Image (cartoon, rainbow, N blue to C red; front, side, top):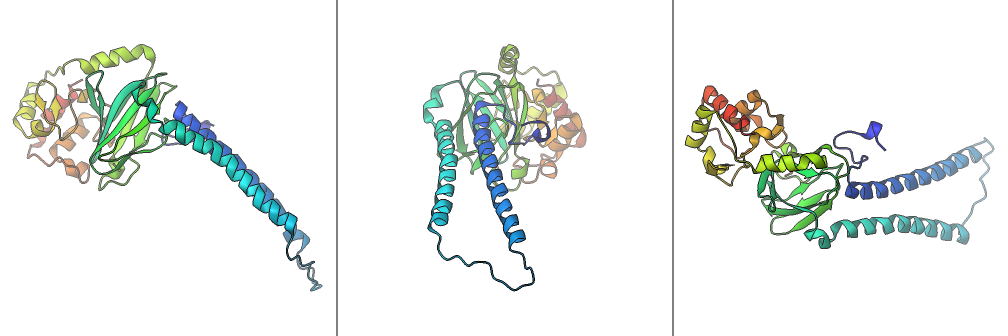
Length: 311
Ligand code: CUA
């Protein structure tokens, strides 16, 4: 199923093993229920036509208790439920298995109000709101707090899984098609829940080492004015720019300029958008934890230019 179903948040297009397993169950249930609809609608139509009021006030034969019918309409749904339950439970157990924890590319997912952090412990890379993975390789996400409950959901790559403080949840999948996939927090988590989006970029195998190298490299910025403003203001208390600051409250901005969107997928990362956000964050993203820092429009633009230069 693709074509008309191929929307960014569509669950009817599978681009990973996990998503395909869910879609298979979904397809099975859809066809079964379609079949039930056809049978019920046919019988209903037959009864309506056959026993319509012909103006003779005659009652059709009245049946009370029909053992064969009662057994069949008990057994048939039981069999249908069994046919649905077996593959469903199978997929639940396969995709929840903690045995997969040690396999594949490990990424720690931390959900905050209202943004995502992705840590690659083995690669010493930290990104925000953009999860990058190579095609054809298993990805093992460790979903950790430390905030209120959020839910990680990238429909074309797999099902939802909650991110719960104090609990470790695991989600594994193997993406099979390079591309960009939209995700969204799927658990109401406060004012900007709807603005807690993310992008998963699945790289072709040949491009994966280049992405790792670019993210491991030190940030190279040449925007002196903006850099000085960033370093002088409260920015550094919350944000990490490797080599400049080590704040842990907000997203790591070391390679901010390499990201496609701003404020957890809210807006495209253009100079205008970044400058507007830096100048007055709550005006752009309701409830955002970053307060206005009292920068002038000109200063905000300088900081935005600096951040966008962090490729
Ligand atoms: Cu995070 Cu909703």
